[in-house]
Each structure stands twice: as structure tokens, then as C-alpha cells.
Amino acid sequence: MKTKYIILLIIAGFLTLSLNGCSLLRKRVEKTEKIEYKINGKNKTEIYVENTTGKINVSRSADTLGMITIEAVKTADVKVDELDKPIEDVTIKLDTTGDGVKIETEVRSSHRIFRKNQGGKVDYDIRVPANLKVNVHNINGAITITRVDNDINAETVNGSINVTGCPGIVNVNGVNGKVTCNIDSLTGGITVDVINGSVNIGGLRYVNANVDASTVNGKVKFKDLTFSNINSEKKSLTGTLGKGGSMIRISAVNGSINFDANRIVSKKDDDFEIKIDFDDDDPIKIIEREPNEPKHIDSMNIPVQPRNADTLKKK
Image (cartoon, rainbow, N blue to C red; front, side, top):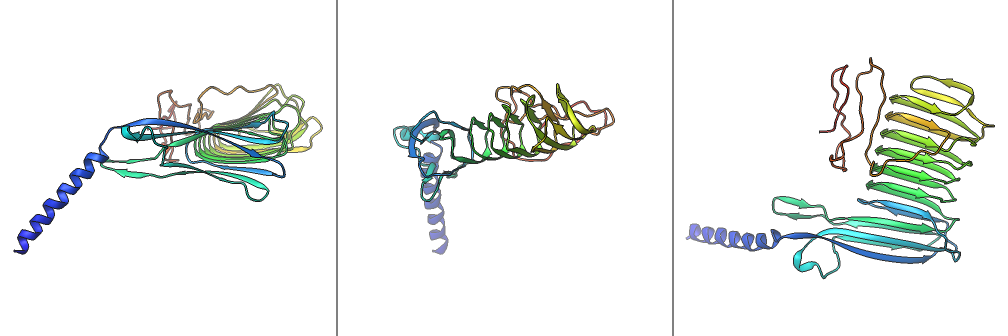
């Protein structure tokens, strides 16, 4: 008798799983959802952006009323019969209490048969008044900050960081991705720490600053610049630009560091481009990714080939 009940329970469980499986295996399609927020920036001093996957663009607003404008585009895979419903797996949380504005992305992962659905992403385009400090944290995706007058803190795990025309104090931290900073003429100071990726600092022709740069695997180069008190070696450089003053401190592990008098134009869609220049006796050489390689990097491991290998490509 017990055996009979066990068999019936197994059959009931199988039928339940089959019915649920039909729902879980239902075809999914990509859905996008655009949202816009407007926040009064009066009496606000900072803005914080925390994202998981997607691009983040922050720029100075032309709005004379001090409004903060946030344009967000959610993207997620949904079932066909959910196309007319709001995206539920991706949530944007806004906190405007106190003297700061916090924008946070929450992505809910759901388990499906045979694979895990990662939920989705959000691309942000944010325009801020001149007085706001900007703090941006991203996991997968590029960060671009343009013409922000106050201080900047930008961090990403997998993605490029591009800062242009920002005269405040700039702090950049990256794991996998290229960093480009273009200065108009004035800087409160720049600090860049990156593990896997090249660092390019441009627009230095009329800048007064003290420079300290070093890399473990790569070279430090400069173009069309005259340094005083210079101490330049293959992997490091210290010196003074103009009259000196603000500090430009750059540190890299796997990547070249380049200083240029002129503006440096980044290649389109170079989120994870890594370039390292080595002499022939150096153990490895990493060049930029192929165009069809995936953008998301799940590991920081860098394979090592024999001494005379010309290139290494991520598997």
C-alpha cells in the first residue's frame, strides 16, 4: 500500500513539474521601458548612482532652475504575454532625503529550467546642476562623465570610464576596462587606479600639475609635453607640468599609461579594450579584444603564453 502511495506522489510531482515547466519554457522576448524623473536639485550637494548592468552617462545640465533630470531605459527578457506589463525584474529606487540624491538599480534573477535568467539592465542618462558632486558605481557597463564642475568619484568592475572637461577632483577606480580623462586646462587633481586596462590622460598642453604614474605590466609614455624635474623610466614617470600644483596620480597593473598634450578620442564601444606594450623580453602582451568578443568579463584571470607570444586573447 505504501508503495502505491509513493508511486502516486511521484506521478503527481512529475505532472506539477511538467505544467510549471511549460510556463517556464515559454518563449521570451526583449522588452524596453523608458522612464524619466525630474528632481529639484536645490539644497542638494551630491548624487549617487549604483547600477548593476548598463551604461551610465552623467553631464552638466543646461537647466538654470537647478533640476536633476534622470532618463532611464530598462531592458529585460519577458514572456510574450507580459509585453503589455511593466518590467518587474528590474527596479529603480530613488532616495531624495537629506542633502543627497541616490539612484539604485535592483535586478532580480529568476531560475528557469536549464538556465538562470539574469533579469536585465538599465542605461542611465543623467543631467545635473553645476554644484553637485557625482558618485557613480557600476558593475557591468561603461561610465561617461562630461562637463561636471564639482568633484567626481567613478568606479566600475567591467567597463570603460571616460571623463571629459571636469575641473574638480576626479577619482577613478576600475578592474577591467580602459580609462580616458581629457582636461580642458584646469584640474583639481586626478587619481586613477586600474587593474586591467590602459589609462589615457589628454588635454594637458596648458595644465599645471605634478605627475606621478606607474604600471606593473606596460609602459608609461608622453607625447608633445615638456616636463620639468622629470624622472622617466619604462614603467614609471614623475615630473612637473607647467608651474605644478594639482596632483595627477595614475596607477595600473596590466596596462599602458599615456599622457598627451592634445585631447584623446576614445574608440566607439571600447568598454573592455586592454592594451599593454612590452619589450621582447617581457613575458606577456595583451592587445585589445576582438569586435565579436563578449563585453561582460566574469573573471580577472589573464592567461600567460610563452615569452615570445605576440598576443593573448581572452577565452
